[in-house]
Length: 279
Image (cartoon, rainbow, N blue to C red; front, side, top):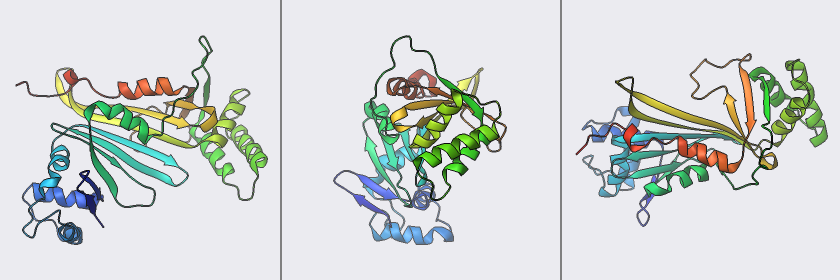
């Protein structure tokens, strides 16, 4: 059921409610499969009897109807994938947060200069210890098939922590004969310590080689708790459907919160990269 908090202009809406708004903005009657969603919006006062939209929705619908930048944040943890995001419009920046097992997301307007902070909050990025200067890069390379085998081993029922570590190590070694120490031990520890994996994807209308096109940047990271943040270099984002299989390379590089913050910042286009009509 949709709801809103007028004191903070925040809304709880499902995708089907957003779809109703889209039809009404286009002057269309929502199709039959969205009638129940329309009635719910009318019941809470966000849509009038004749399809008129509540003034409180102005910033939200303005950004959704004419976005300059779309940012998708997908986090996969213990409860499965959860989707968040930000829509940067001409007159407002709208952030939305999902919740595991819930249909609705919370939509709220944020200040543009807090955008990077907002993205860092969504992925639970916390300040950690910076590596010592000159410390060598740590890379772990295997295959996606080996990773799948490790996750299957980790889910074995009844295994204690030490048994789980041994099972994961064995599964990795059997799936990738070329994976040797210390990389084998590193990857085992990362899999066992994994809090979540997340990726941020930004998209906007830009220009490349003199042609207007959709521009995309993305970042994928493993949050391994006490073992820190690891950037997933391969498979390289953005990933297209069917592009990744068991034989695809998996490359993880140790990082830190400061570097991840910078990479999140780099995902955002500069103003000159946007197709904005000059006034």
